Image 1: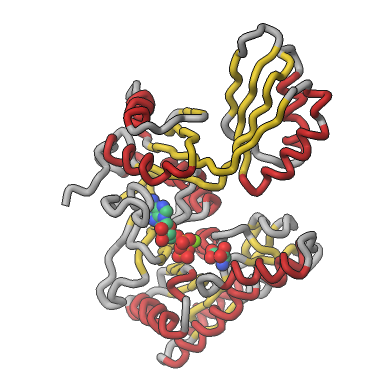
Image 2: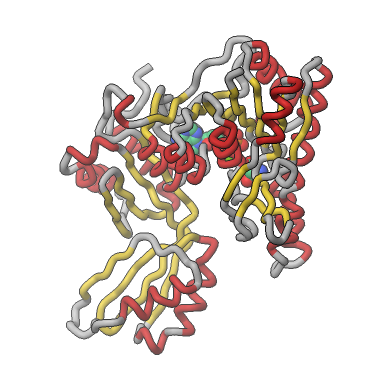
Length: 413
Ligand code: ADP
Ligand code: ASP
Ligand code: MG
């Protein structure tokens, strides 16, 4: 029998009624002749609630216990879906990460999948065509035996990794939108659904803020060549639409210069003023941040009026902002900075498209269009298939809509 992995996100399993609806989607694929493994998220809002409880108990919590708590949301939905399937006469059982087992690294809170042993699930496919309902987001570190989680949005990664391990024909990611759009359809109602997106573009879109897929899931789909679709669980279970296929660039007939616009509010800006302009200063600033695992993203250095000093601006994830400022304050004398300033009300807006490789001047058109709207650009980065601008958060929607129209992405309908 061909195998299929189906993944359902938080809104798709938000209550028992929706879980019954998920069971109908699964039943359709079982009837079509697939051996099915289903990966589920926690009910929407549940993981946030669990994270809140942990922080409330102790802001300096033990990461292993954090994982024990936050992984529990998926245990509930996997059990409930197995029960709903059984009620419809479909053999099914739930699997927690440690039962499969899904082995991971021991980075609690952001563990990486190391190996999945699919043998037990495959044996039960063989023996009874039993549907495997697997808790997403979680695994186990084999040496310590402790429960781990894969980082927020990690059920996508569980699903693609399981599809690779089971040799599934494809992985269907069911969510609350019917595919990948040219930008977040909640922000731009005129966003267009894409039939296909290239792996490289999806990787950039996900890492630049489009949370429709976790970045790691796209990497795994690309490396293991898992055909992955994003589709809606709210479609009629008997007549679903195919959704968006994430595939090789060569399999897409027409490549516009810009395929999508992404934005991330998860950014903070730090500026060091009047830093001594001499060799070794950049190392003195970024060395301690790197040692503390802070991911520095955009960096700009400005030559100031006097020849002796310079200003350096860069961005860090907003979760690391306070920590980064404290580290820089500690090293202030070594860096020789006069003033350290920061801002958290900033957003990074990015345009992505493999077509940028062969077109010049794509970014400069954006700078002009944003200037015409009175939007000030604080920092810029570019690479082969994307460029990003850092702007005031208050202009997020205006900037995203402006770029979306500029590159001809608006739905004409
Ligand atoms: P799930 O709980 O099913 O994993 P998520 O909330 O993680 O769902 O991801 C789906 C959401 O991603 C959509 O509701 C949408 O608002 C958002 N999103 C952001 N960018 C995009 C995009 N380019 N295309 C589609 N959805 C997007
Ligand atoms: N429940 C987890 C989260 O909210 C994992 C997921 O939904 O993918 O991050
Ligand atoms: Mg998600």
